[in-house]
Image (tube, rainbow, N blue to C red; front, side):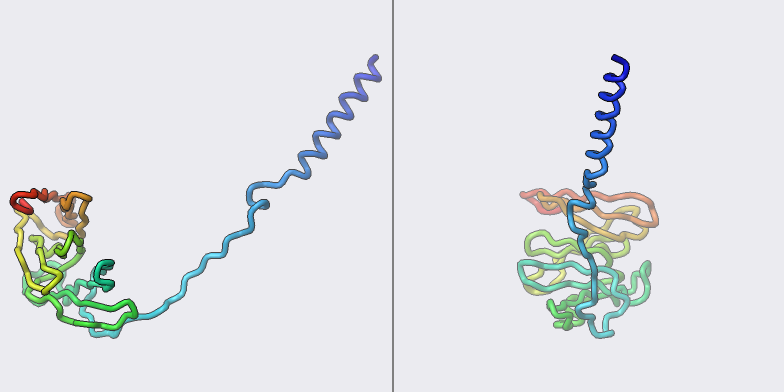
Amino acid sequence: MKITTFFFVLICAVAISCKSGTKKTTDEQQPARQFGISEVWRTDTLLLTPESVIYDKKRDVFYVSNLNFEPRKKDGNGFISKIDLDGKIVNLRWIEGLSSPKGMAIVGDTLFTADVDEVVAMDINDGSIIRKIPIEGAKMLNDITSDNEGNLYISDSDANLIHFIRQRKDVGLV
């Protein structure tokens, strides 16, 4: 009986070890994916301290915010450039009258940018400044994003906080 049990256990052990030796791992079952990136194009060097870029899928262009060297200074020499999908500068100073535009967000036909201590709303159709919204206590507004309802969220890098601007359908941004 002992010999029979011994051979039974031995056969089971061999069977298990043979089966586990042929099992493929997940990595072996799927071919390795190759990933690489390469530069496709680059713009001309006319941009002046470009800080942020955003794609406008409705118009199929990029907008680039240009600090023009001073990220915290309210000097009025910042601007927004328009660039095509091949990297060609379509309009270097498409929107002027900004100080140090940084992050941008698009809501409908309005382009918003964080500009030192205010959020600037610009009409994408004609490139005009619609409104400047001062942010009380802001030190250096940096990036901006929007949600599905058009509300804006703006980071303030120097103050270590996020500002919120609510979109109201009856009066716009408040």
